[in-house]
Length: 203
Ligand code: K1U
Ligand code: ZN
Image 1 (cartoon, rainbow, N blue to C red):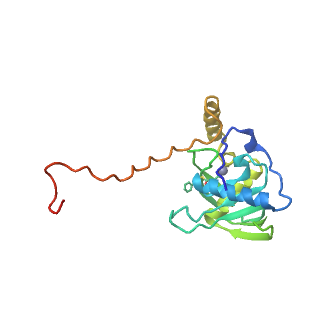
Image 2 (cartoon, rainbow, N blue to C red):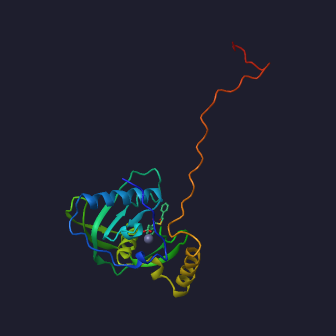
Image 3 (cartoon, rainbow, N blue to C red):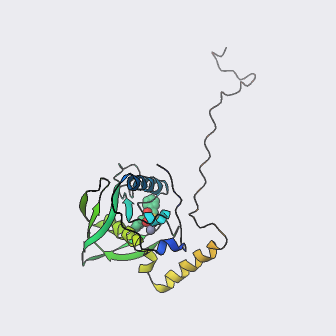
């Protein structure tokens, strides 16, 4: 498994319609595993293959850790996901996107969905979702069609955020900036003996 760089807007690869997977083979499984590792590391609750510049209809999700970091991982790996049904009832959620770092906005989408897909073994599956999982599935499937969550917000807000990232792209490399790792604590060294302050029992 390996960590992959996440591309950010205005990278044109985020606007392409991704190719369907013909067969879930070892290469697709390796891609799914790389994507999960990259998503957990980001950290995020979902990731679509185009976000790591892979032109395949593959998404991964794990919404279990959204509220509770210590919750057990519940990874989902989906190839060729398709929305089979969406509720008329709508819900609003403040969404973010790893390809649009540090920008959050309310998005209104169907509250419940049924999604068909191929799992890690290439078996046909169906999942019914509501709440955050329904939101995240729709966000990730949008990525496979070159659609970003900012396409669901007002034209004015979208123009503002796109302009900001276009300006940054002229001066910075087009991958998501990562926080530098925290400095490791220095290995505990034996305290130097202080003359005249020896505790009772010192040799
Ligand atoms: O597709 C992506 O860019 C991932 C995105 C998924 C998503 C988030 C919120 C609503 C719908 C879809 C993210 O994961 S953004 C980061 C995020 O939500 C998060 C960050 C830290 C801890 C937990 C979640
Ligand atoms: Zn996204």
